[in-house]
Length: 135
View 1 (tube, rainbow, N blue to C red):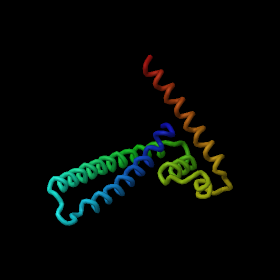
View 2: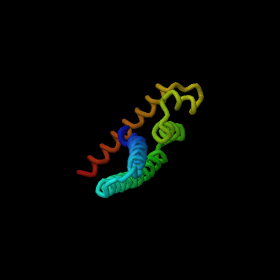
View 3: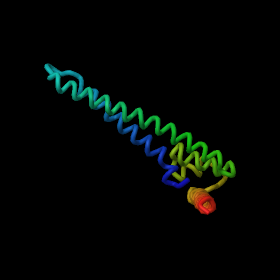
View 4: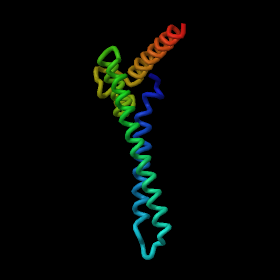
């Protein structure tokens, strides 16, 4: 898995949060004030329904990404790497916070380097597996 793939879960969560905030604004705006024209009310209702559908779809994608992320984390070779990956990509902590949670006198930079080194090795291994499959 790539760093971009690992970050996809957090990106989806951010998109959902923004969409939900936008939905709340639309709902407040859609509250009838005085004599609202019927066509405007229908347009606003359709916009709200569309955004609710987008949020629902993104929620499903987010659940799927979390499942894939958890599968990947469980496949990692040791508990420390699993913990680092979980803290960074599921809880979305910065590297200093990851180091504090891991403890043991670890620094954020060393944990980042360790994880990225593993990701590079894993990527090279997968590329080698794909070359073998093509032959």
